[in-house]
Every structure is written in structure tokens, then in C-alpha cells.
Image (tube, rainbow, N blue to C red; front, top):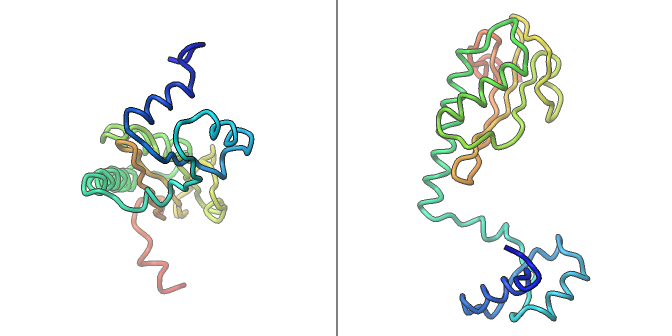
Amino acid sequence: MLDATNTLTTIVNQIIADEQLQTLGFEGQQVSWETAHRWKSELNAKLVSATPDVLRQIKTPEEVEIIRLACGIADRGAEHIRRFIQAGMSEREIAAELEWFMRQQGAEKASFDTIVASGWRGALPHGKASDKIVAAGEFVTLDFGALYQGYCSDMTRTLLVNGRRVSGRISPAV
């Protein structure tokens, strides 16, 4: 806990000492010059601007397995929602059901706001689920994912309102 004697600088310096760090990376694009300059004078390590994206590129076997599990939750969600969708439901109802189902499968929450866009709304990039009622014969585009043990899955599916997969039907027309 931070207080007058236990400052953020004190805590970070303790971590530097405990871990015997020589260099400490920070997101230079996210930190102001003033803050970085202050850290340079207060912290007991050489500071370097680092991008954590590089660290995220290589996964351990354990991380790969967690990602597979997150994808599995989303896959089961896609199968469930394919059978669930019916004419007369709102996009918001469909999104809520999908998110609830993924939680029942072990997801901490959705990876991001679930997109359900039916009919003409399917052409909108990153549209939010709305109160629009899905009509028979409409396409429904779903963009969703599951957060599981800190890792996210991301999936997009387009279905007919009666739930049949449509990829085979639209490929020849493209």
C-alpha cells in the first residue's frame, strides 16, 4: 500500500534490489518526458524505453494452451448461439446470451464488447449490439471473444437468422 513512507519509487526500488535488476524498461510512448526524467533520477536502474509487444510475441507452451482454451470457449459459444438465434430477438439479447454462455464455460468475461449486427447493420464496422430485432432470412454478423486467465480469443461469424452457417453460400457470389 502506498503512503508517505512507502512511495511508488520506494516499492519499485525494492523490486529492483530484490530482482537484482540493472535495467528497467517502460513504455516510452505512454510516459511523459517529465515523468521519465523524474524516474531516471529516482530509480536505481538504467531506464530504457521498451515496447511490451515484443515480449508478447513469443508464447510459452502454457500460454499457448491457455489461448487454446480461450478459443475453445469462443468456439462453443459460436455453436451455442448458432442454435439459439431466432427471428424476433434483439441483437442485444443475442449478445447477452452469448456472453452469459461463455461465462458458463469458464470465461472471466468477454474479450471486448460483443458485436451483433443484423441485416443492413452488418455492413457497419465495429457496430454495437442494438435493440434492432432480427428478421427471418437476415444475416447476423457476430464479433466476440472470451477472456480466460488473462488471454483473449477473438472470433467473427456470419450466420442466417435461423442459425445455418452461410460461408459456403456466399463464397460463390464473392
